[in-house]
Length: 494
Image (tube, rainbow, N blue to C red):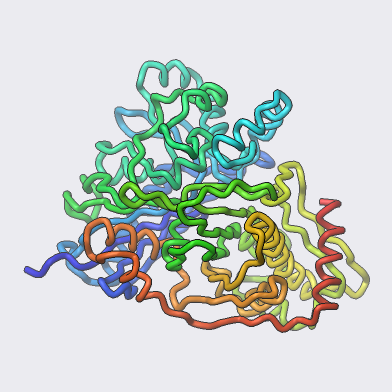
């Protein structure tokens, strides 16, 4: 029997769960995605059913194995990447969640964050965690669940409950409840994990009212986290050897292994991440400082800017306004006009993330005339996505003290040539799009394969990265400056 030579990657995202099989050459053998329900119980509230997430993962695993027709004995390891900050609390005894997962987009704890800010804790949280006081992060979400489910706090104090982000929940299910663990890239997004070591902070747990006892163990990203047990369609005993939050996993999957290398992932939201190497770079321009990954004892750090609405804007054009029948139609519609006709669309439907951090902001369409058509709205939506990323790039350049160079792009919306060209124009820098846009899953697979010894080192991994296309900026400076000026005026009003 030949040695196991295939990696199974689980990419658990905001709207669906994707499973990928990759061989030792990082060639994609098969992939499959299963979507699940988005719950919006109140304005500003976004929830997922954890059981439905698990079931979507199981279906995706079964379907990708059926597509590939490979023997499960060939699976060397499983890697997991996840929508970060989304938080779950569940029972130790049976794994049942006590409440729906509260999603990273959820804004229900904005008042709690404002209260902490008013009491003077913003600088402390920023200094300790590299994060801003915002409902985006996990800590206040976990506290909300404990406060709003009858008996939850007392049950947590009795040791009956455990909690974590989606990676931790999936690991628990994959191992039959034997592993309650996470890794630093997810831990550093909770507001409970100090950047300068020491594990979960008692001080931050007390501030945010989260019992430390419910939080998982933290191990390096390539550690052996456990082995499969009772997973439908998989044999027991497959090692789970690579875990990272989706945006850090994408940075790894894009082979941005060195300082000053950056990527942007265009998914439900858009996330720009810059590798800062072994140096922690505090941001004074509205960005976040987080762990990129930890391999062995070595930690790599990053700067990140997060935009809450990217692909979700296109979904809103489809589902909310009905001006397109499918997301794929937006590019042709937007390209049917030479510009947006002066229309600006600010995608602040879920508040504004970096570098503005205004949770109360709301989406805005400005500059409509009698001549405005749905094509102008579509183009303004794509421009709004690209302009958000341009804001992040300027903030990163300010923190670094030099302009950004080449940017690597990935995610579903990176397949949109018009959006990528707009992005290059507004960044005044080239973009490289890889052949494989599933960079998050690719990163999880790379970490798992590295952990299990399928690849020797990151140099071997980097050799497998392949470019599909480079986008060079070609917009004249006057048009670019006018677009930026209209955007600045609109952002101020959102």
